[in-house]
Image (cartoon, rainbow, N blue to C red; front, side, top):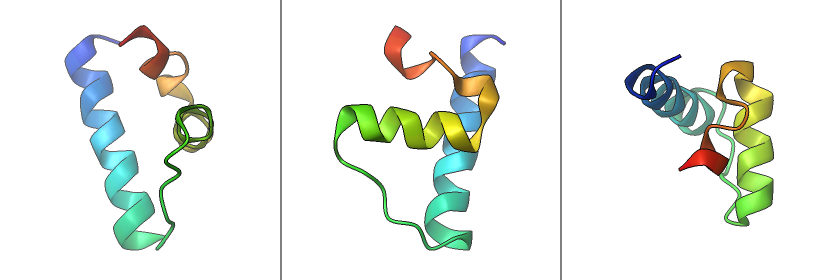
Length: 50
């Protein structure tokens, strides 16, 4: 995936987690990365590369 596509996926995941699933976001960086990567496998390693 290119950066723009991964960013779109990240935004979609965050929206779904907060608005549709009513999940709270984790503020700890490691927990946040794990939470995002578990929701969308295509984002594995994306946040660590930023």
